[in-house]
Length: 307
Image (tube, rainbow, N blue to C red; front, side, top):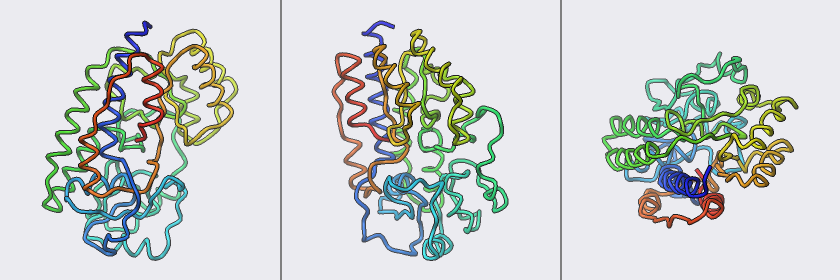
């Protein structure tokens, strides 16, 4: 892969992810959001989308980047707020099921199919196959089309305006469509929704992906196969989740850096809890100057882009 080609691809990805940050970027939690209000979100990322549509602050139950929603244990107060809300904005799937399963399903706006109580009890029993549709990718906020769907559904229920979100998503999709064919690897498939249906071809070894989806440590053979792909130059860039690392991911990142393969760091959770709609609108106006080399692009993304 030529440096110029990598730089162009990375520049496009950086522009895409920076634009996408506007939909899921979170700042300090507001204490002014009314409890028991008409609309509430399970997590900060979906509160941001709802706020962009309604033009008002939308509170979230799970805030910050210290708690994984998979393991969140809601309080009685948390569950009461979900039950009382006229509209609950949720991710769906196993991700935030501990919260939304107490609400009536016709009041839930969700990105991927909901689980019922019985399914929630077996939420970690993944089938032994790779995702075949966006509905099987639980980090749904990475998928532009899913963000659009949620925004449109919130607008229908609240009388808000999803136009600005739809416009931003269209711009993101246009940029993604311009990315040329490249091979990528992911230490964790959280950004799968972002690259789904694009020329960013994920060639991460299947056994490694399955282990990651099942929240298991990959086998030595799976890690070895992944390392060989990087060493042989089969992978043009490596997507790394800096919020979830272990000895295997550190080895993969180290080898990629030795091979001069750019690292794109995608955090599963935003740095902070949530943002007001004012902050959100400001973030849409941010500009980004394209770096001139792949290493500069990688550094820019790792420092500034957290979806």
